[in-house]
Image 1 (cartoon, rainbow, N blue to C red):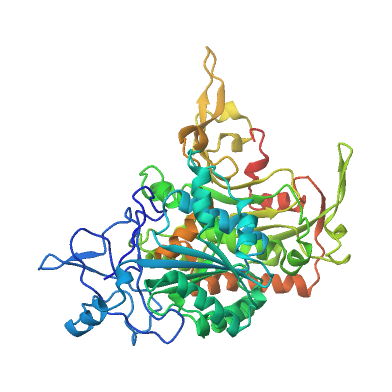
Image 2 (spheres, rainbow, N blue to C red):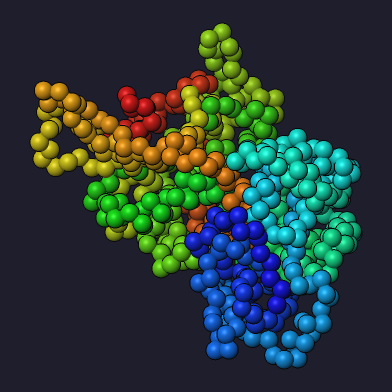
Length: 596
């Protein structure tokens, strides 16, 4: 059985998790070859590779000393097909067929096709992330990267464009230019229409040339507008799927704009893909502090007992940007801040934060618990939502444009660039605890953080030292996702001296001070997980359905009633209405405190 391994220097982001899509596992003992089972749809076979630093928890030692691999089943796997969770050993005749395969098939190869390679996302995020993985020896020995787009371009022209976005930020090693040159030699380009099967046939021929008869695995990254997702998937399915390995497709948000359009997109994709081939990416789930959220909670005894309504007074999920739409107004106006940020990024973080302890660290166990949280949430009332839109403002002699000053935005647009909402989870752990979300553009700073405010100490002996503002005495746990990643806990402390003066201090873990290694970009982690078949940080279809079910009713009500957003100056803290919303639940936004 052919397996493919990455360098020993690379430790996958999911190195403590089971990789649930590997038939072969690189070990010094011999591997039992597995039969390759044909599927009707894209990705006819299930051959995968795994990093050397990935665990061997799914490897079973047979009586004769050989190794077989047990695969973990997903909830949505059809019973009629051989899916993960079944252990299979190749019969002798099929073993002979595999042994007679091309002599180059002793190793696998991965072909990564970036569909929409001429776009900003590909140039600024995807290609740099792929280079960072290559730089760290995280990609397999045999891999090829193809850019695919409508623009006419040669391989050399693509390499020139990509080279301008690559950096050697990681550990600042001396061989960076050499690595960059080697990486660019693996990058190729094919021009074609997204809805042309013939163009994808031509792409398929080029991919096969580079795969050179090896066991071929293919990953397609759809960095294109959502209205052409299905066309591209159809053409890849019928004309460019892997003949003897797996095929996976990464789909960028937005996944529709409401429950109906999202469900229609899922149905259309599943005409050509199985659910376990669809990797719906939310790059916020790949951020280091979001990844660390479950570690912080489940591996530290001091936190898990406090993680409930008994000790937590409120939870705040805050996202702010200090710039406006900046040329993306046409796209943004179709979606707005609630769809763009709250329904996906912040809601995903909320689900991870509030979920019960999963049975294991397997992807399906974690995603099952997240779905339970989303299905337990109370419907969002329009009275619990505040929307705003930034207007022009002059500060320090500099004039900043308003949202509707963007030429791509209608002058009478009511699309919110700011939103705040109060959400509630109707279960025993979180009953009555407000989860406050706030997201906005053109605010006074850039940040993304989770703030956990604990209850007041009952019968606090030191209340008189805090006066009437008991919130000054509240313990608060802050998880700063960006920028300057940090985790800090606000505690009350005596100021040194003869008197009894109290001070609020931070127990602070600032990542850049504690760890010398630079934090990988979220796209690096997610791309590596997709290649390895680790689905833990990707969104399952039922998870997506539950998220849209929560937000669709209030979005429709806002649009049908044509509710006018509250205007706020560019560079301010946002609409005043957000503070009234928080005050209704006896909460103060933590990001505007005196110590902030």
